[in-house]
Image 1 (cartoon, rainbow, N blue to C red):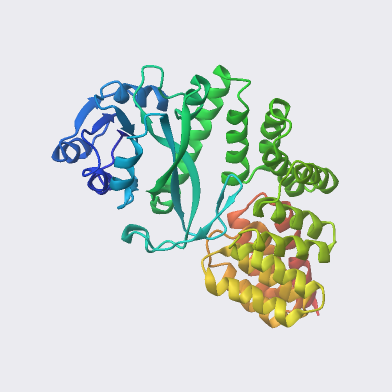
Image 2 (image 1 turned 90 degrees about the vertical axis):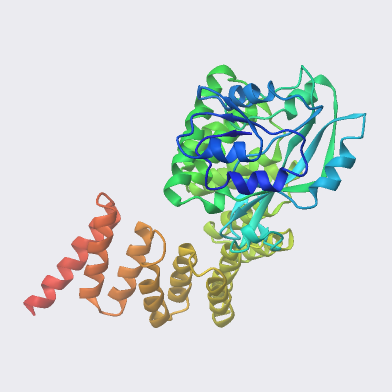
Length: 438
């Protein structure tokens, strides 16, 4: 392990692994809390590792201090599954295998989360520590490997040994145990944001050393798109990754998502069709096809794509809501609104669902529902500038100009440079002035 200031989770992690391993080696990269004391209480050996903005260097410093024939690596915000002891004992007897791909369950707060092209799945409540989280997203990584002088960590960030083992021609197969990762769900929003920004900065440094590493471009593109909601910044990374790996349907899917979010719908649809020709059929791709169809006013096609995404494994309340707004626009207002309301009941803290219900209610001509939803939306999460605009528009339709002006005023305090809010404010103030004159 490498750890820095992990006192809140380290004991939990080490407790889960202590019966499985023969030694624990921890590279401490500068803790100022009780991390070292906790580690020593589990008979861990502490290696002081100067931090050099390089995760692989730190992990290799700890790796080099180990003495066992096999290596399992964990992070402090992870837990080893309770059934892993028997599984690992069996796996390390296989003399032909040098590494095992392990399933990692990344717990998240919403079923709309995804990782790469994997949608979130409902939490089966396998461990108590994760019982309050709605879902998890699975990915795999080589976390158990045979000690060998030529097997070591690579990559300044998103580091691993998998590529190294593959290049050496050694055998890697799937393991049958799980590692539970709680950090994404447990971190406060500010902490997670700082971590994401730091990983993104390290990823950019990584490109200096590895400009032709398609995965490095892909990781940076995902960061810009999924974490920073910036498709304009993400697209060049995906385009460069495609130059290096042109037949990746996942890369074409994400390029298409960028185009669609940028409003470049023909380009987005073409990229998504290219992904489909290359074999894309996953829920992320199908949802993106739905988004392209919806924004191109092909509502029936969009609905089919969203339903196909659900059939392909998506459990997303957001996709359910998108189906609902399609139903409203296709004439089934009652069923569509009920579908969106059910999605909100499922995830009441998911602000974007309220935006969709507001828009759907307006399409359905139900101003009262739209107004009530707009009031709820402005107290949920971090409403966007559009949330304030939609709310003000609803109150304007109802003739409640004072309330519309108040909503826009609050919106401008949050988004002071937003041209649409400033324009709406001027228009509403003109209307109020005209009312006063009459």
